[in-house]
Length: 327
View 1 (tube, rainbow, N blue to C red):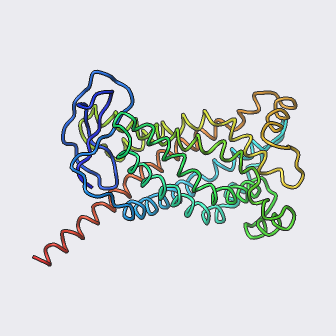
View 2 (cartoon, rainbow, N blue to C red; view 1 turned 60 degrees about the horizontal axis):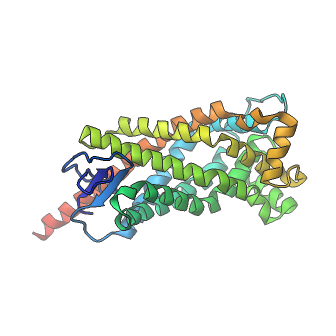
View 3 (cartoon, rainbow, N blue to C red; view 1 turned 90 degrees about the vertical axis):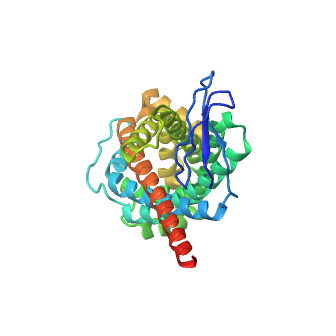
């Protein structure tokens, strides 16, 4: 990767560097006359290394995903039980780590799949789109990563949430019984509602994160440190989590209903919840969700940037070592 310049506004002269796997240094910062979205333009760039970007994304995404799930799983369990409870149902606080092992088995490949698609797609779009449309690149890459990860995320989420609500005691039993009673499609219960929640969530969260980072770097005229990345990640995660809570409630209800089929679909689910529990029920679990995703965003993006930087520095050291040997 060559040096990458970033711009804010609608002019071609406004520039600053774009964050990527190679962690380039800031060369020049200037302000344009129009303040719109942060945008990116590529400087003296080398050929796009798709494979290296893919590998780095998989490693960084998998590492960040596992760390977040392990640390914050109890908060996620409480959120799920709040959303699953009908009326004034009591929330049980036992077994807050129920289903963690099975969830981690899915989170690692799902997070890797997401970043493995997101990073190459983002970098490619930043090269193809006009420099003032970097937000479009981030939104599109986030949605693309979400679609790729959903094939793994949904079965993992179905098993996890049914264990969190006490329907099963182990992941293998959950998979076996779900398939025997509902067929293989039971593992993808609520798939459309999952996409309805996760595609806008992934697109908005990563776009917010990337755009705020670019604006911050423009103002600071330097690379951001890990605490700064973590704070930006927390803000982006918390805000996106709050906005998408109703979609998360719908997704949870459809995923845990099992073969009972209380809800016929997304629309029926919304109508039934509003009719039987009132509209505020669509915001159930918003507190734990915002807390969980806010802290999770802080950890995830902090670990993500640290891992990307570590991989880049390690690669540079290997290249330097190889060049010295050849000299």
